[in-house]
Length: 287
View 1 (cartoon, rainbow, N blue to C red):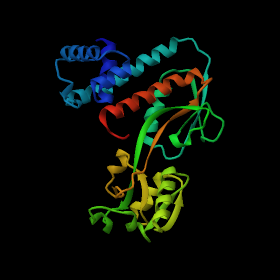
View 2 (cartoon, helix red, strand yellow):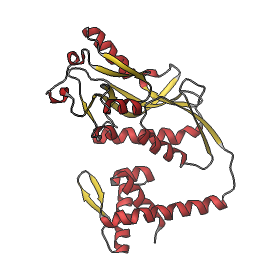
View 3 (cartoon, one colour):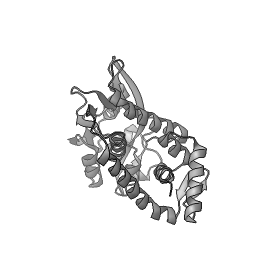
View 4 (cartoon, helix red, strand yellow):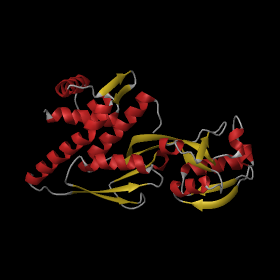
């Protein structure tokens, strides 16, 4: 069986489309399509259902995926076993808070997987580092910026809250509303400015740093909060998210790196960021 076809299959399975697999594997889309067709012919089954918005794995595709992953990992292990050690490439990456565990784990996994000699150290963004993943508003004058994600923010309310019955929620509805405040957070600072301008004051019940703890308190009914509209948050049943009428709070998050003299080890990270940003532009989905 052609190992390359399995690699293309994994990329298509994880990317959800032929185009995503082509970008990940750095080949043309027809090459991915041809390889998948050959693999399906070889196995005598259909691995993906093709549709206008991409592809969906069939039951047989679901069965093949963990096996293909194991084969890929075994081949990588064999390659590492006989590869001569190369000098490590240390990279210090500063991470702002509240980036989203799921998407950051995926990004860092792909980045580290680009080379066995990458030695990654995660630090706070204000510490000395080779690059930072931050909001664009935090960009320093000497830094270049590769956007990755575009986050819109929504009001998070516990399930069953009376405000959920309203057709639209305005800043006036936040008056004396129990609230969970996060700091530091550029989106919360924008909300504070809007509240001050409108002469509205909410009741701050707690001040936290992380979104995870904030969501826990919202779900427990302690108060409302402002959170990014990540898919994993929108999918929760104990927290409901609603837009604030007339207030569009958002931020672009990406890699800030030295405009001059950036380490070559950052190239794979910047390429991954560009792929994620271009995918957002094609789908129109804020990720």
